[in-house]
Image (cartoon, rainbow, N blue to C red; front, side, top):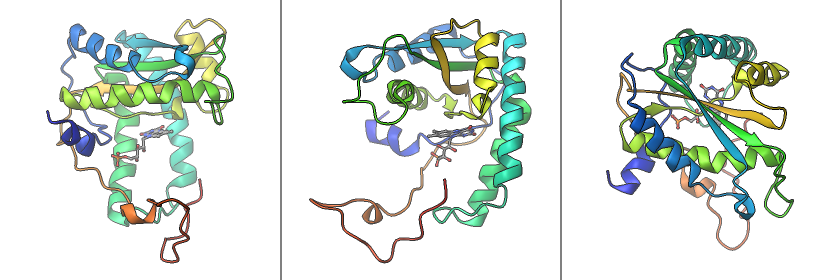
Length: 219
Ligand SMILES: Cc1cc2nc3c(=O)[nH]c(=O)nc-3n(C[C@H](O)[C@H](O)[C@H](O)COP(=O)(O)O)c2cc1C
């Protein structure tokens, strides 16, 4: 696929066929993730690819708890960048994935290695998270290029559930699960991705205060 077609259509895909993803494809995806940027090239991350039904079920249970809480607290929340119809389709897809996570062909858990500490010069906010997310984006784009559906998710690790997930995955204490990426051949079509207009967020030389920008969403 042409590179910018991949970027423009790599949207969140949450409904998959049951067909397995061949192991060489999974390895190719993790290789792409592994090549992602890393602060001082410390490469402080690990990848657990889950295909075992029992482990998938345990992760699906954690995801269900996180998503249920999210849906309870956010179902009515407005997002100024998304109209009501799209918001409802998004919530329905999140709920569908919650109900089917245990059936997903493969689940990748992107983990941060906290022994290898990134320095403040490149890590803004949670350093473990910053080390992992750029690599996860490589994984998402590679998946799209190969026709594999994916979405980066975090709700399985809400609050103390991160510790529970670490136990399920047999992680040592210094390895933290950060992002759960389900992978499967999608039932629907990719793309196009929709975002707020570029001129609301693109600034030249200095920040331009734009009076017509919608109110910032609460996060
Ligand atoms: C930090 C972060 C956390 C996310 N957590 C979840 C999640 O727990 N569950 C989920 O279904 N999607 C999750 N997403 C995916 C977003 O919902 C998705 O990127 C966004 O709605 C845009 O989707 P689109 O690219 O299809 O337009 C997360 C994305 C990010 C960047």
